[in-house]
Length: 67
Image 1 (spheres, rainbow, N blue to C red):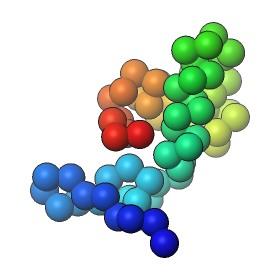
Image 2: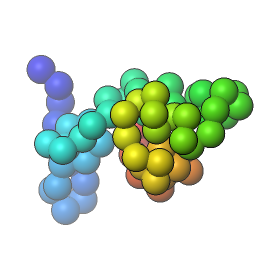
Image 3: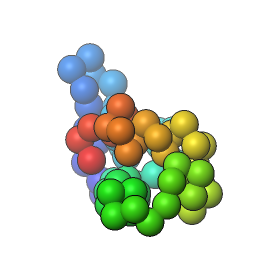
């Protein structure tokens, strides 16, 4: 069973959040692909099944900081 991570206000965060669509491994892979120049936000969003703004926020470390 996966450990549930919580932030300073005791809310779930990262992959343990009940509405999370991406795993920690997918987030790491997405960042690695972007840094390697494999594709842009649209490509990553289509590949991982999330929105373009979500892909952008993950790559820019606006969300999923602990990943």
